[in-house]
Amino acid sequence: MTGAVETSLSKSARARAARYNHYGQKIGSKGERTRQTLIDTTVALLETHGLRDVSVADVARSAQTSPATFYVYFRGVPEVVLAALASAAQSTPEIDQALAQDWLATGGKRLARTFVDAYCDMWNSNRTIFRVRNLAAEEGDERFYRARMEAALPIMTGLTALVKKAQTDGLVPRDLKPRSCGATILMMLERLAAVGPMAREDDDISYDALRAAAAHTVAMMLGAGA
Image 1 (spheres, rainbow, N blue to C red):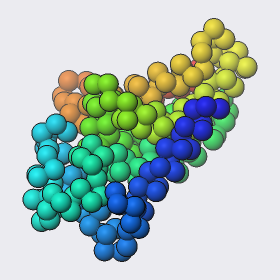
Image 2 (cartoon, rainbow, N blue to C red):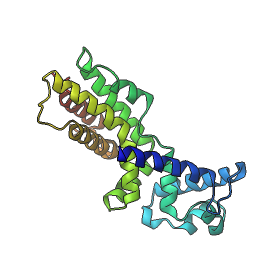
Image 3 (tube, rainbow, N blue to C red):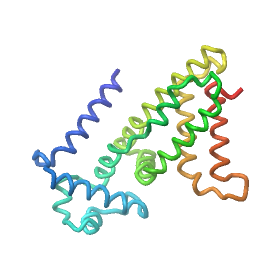
Image 4 (tube, one colour):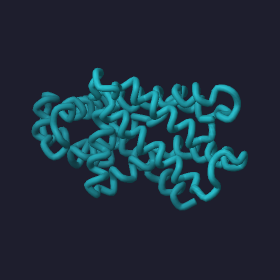
């Protein structure tokens, strides 16, 4: 319950941050446009630079504004990334629909491929900020770690439920922890989405081949691979 409360509070805090600047003033339509421009500019810079390599001055210059204006809305570049993450859901209707199906009925393998493809497409549509988030989380930044865990929660919940069902039907060993199984699947898919597009097409590990192998692994983990 504590985790759910913290998640709710963090969402509320981010929602308020999007409506008010650091002086407690409510952001109007012009301010919203300025704030979004700063977010978009930062994300664009991060496509070719690391988080530590982008300064407030860089963002302000690229956005054709001043550092003083930047600081009206954000304390630093990491806060801009966190704001961008707030509007980048790590799920889609297609993913949600796949996780809501009965994977043990006919079509489990097909659902696994649909799920893997949808996850990779979703991740790559936000790859810049997801990459920056994950690197910062792995370097120990608690803010990005929380953002990563919070984003993964809906999919983790769906995967955990599917593992439990498969265990009930005797298709997945009961000594495995359902949430650990879900976390393992997500770790595999995150890595696949991050590096898969760079796979060579001529050595049996093309992106499509990797997705197919991942789908098979997911189906097996959820008891639908037989």
